[in-house]
Amino acid sequence: MSLTVQQLTREFTYNGMTLPDPGSAFTPDQVRDMYTAQYPELTTATVDGPEHSGDTARYKFVRAAGAKGCHA
Image 1 (cartoon, rainbow, N blue to C red):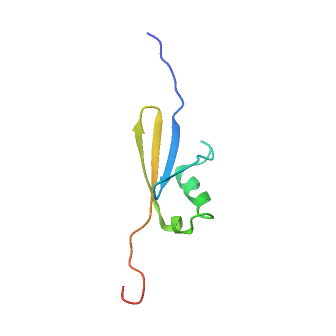
Image 2: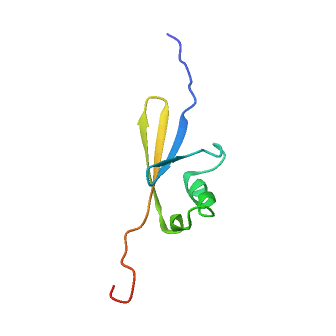
């Protein structure tokens, strides 16, 4: 019996978009922080996952729900 090691592919999604993985050297939180320059609302987002599907680990950036405005 031989054992095969496969590299998991990471996939990050936000608001229906798939964002490229900058590399496995970055933690999912660091990836989220990197994307805050393009998507400032990710500053307060949480990282859900990973959900495994075959050789892919999917992480989802979920914005924190909250009320805005003076009537909150």
